Length: 296
Image (tube, rainbow, N blue to C red):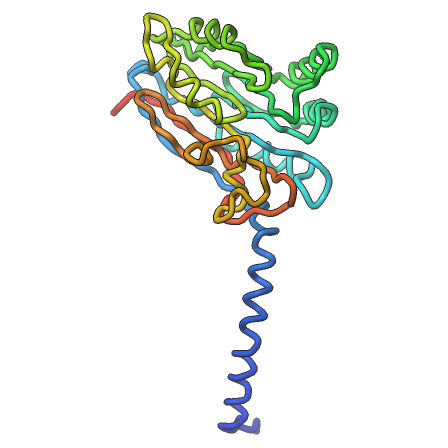
């Protein structure tokens, strides 16, 4: 017959557990920043707009940014395969890539050459981040070729018009913040048609204020509908976002989340990978699924 634990033994055991709790909590707190980068979330939302025809089925747009692919313990090529599976599982109509795919232009080119197949009904479009942009035109041409070979359309201060369904056009504008000039921006704005649903991408959200001061065709101030940005990683450490010094060029109001300005909706992503250290706290990696439809 098992012996019962005496009152004093129970008390000693309880005190031992109390002493162990702070150590256990400390271990958990030390591990969380290294675990969170591997907890991929999907930010899913419905966006209603009268720029979308009433009879058109909802448009599913997926945005992904800031992978920073490199060797363990950072974001790896094996994780990239899982990410592409997650993207494809959203059944996207459009896939938009927001820059900083690796740590330098050579690795970005290798990233696209190794990119698993992304499935999208109306195409894949990408801008470049500061880590991706080659200095020479020859290297840029080679990077473009690597992207096109994977059915990715590079948008370097370009606008493309995408036919959706039989009679609807959506425009996608891609800005390169490392080479953008006033004249280039003015020309790009004039190409965007106010009657179309316009989606804008730029890697760095510091440009938002500049975008808001522009007027489009016919003097319209709200010349785009939806804009996506990366670069900030959401601060990467939520309560001390300036600790890693990766976002010192971005105003606090454009650090993460959704910013509504009239007709325009701006989404600043936490991104996927990490910089400086392979940690995140209160800024989990995320992809974005926006379901755009006519108001119901």
